[in-house]
View 1 (tube, rainbow over the protein chains, first blue to last red):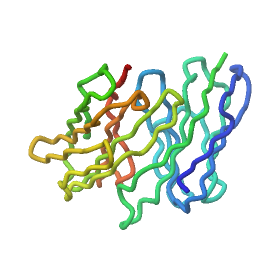
View 2: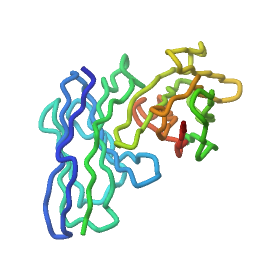
View 3: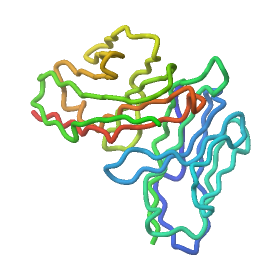
Length: 117
Length: 116
């Protein structure tokens, strides 16, 4: 099973709202990722969690707050977003970054299409 | 620094034609990994293939084949006898051992349109 699930599929929120995006995988992967993708652009890495610890933060604004409650779940908490944050948010997972798993392929979820009004 | 170049922004072919998507990469790492992903209009990125820098063997999977050449830093993807369902954006990506091997650098993507 190579499935990564994300909820919700679509989200419309105002600039003062607080919302969360959720991601789940049951492949036993120990690395999980958040990407942001604007239309006609490649995905941009936001955060990487490795063994439930934040290992990479690509200088993402603090209005995006990631959380990894356990090895299967990854959340992205959103607060006071701007219209330019409207995008497709993709979650991915991979086996991990330990010596034997480096460079392992990432499996992506279907994404959450976020619109900030 | 790592870089992936997909010079073809958009390609249009007629069904059953063969098509090659080009990918050129740059990295200072001696150990690195190359990937191809497909993104259909639905939005989900679908993993197609992974290659490490020590394995230059070409690969064929059904109608798909990949040509990895370290001498030219290229990892090209060929679809034989294209079908309408192949219409998608295709991304080539690279991760180097310096970044722990799990930080992907994507190319800008190639939009493939297969018409009847």
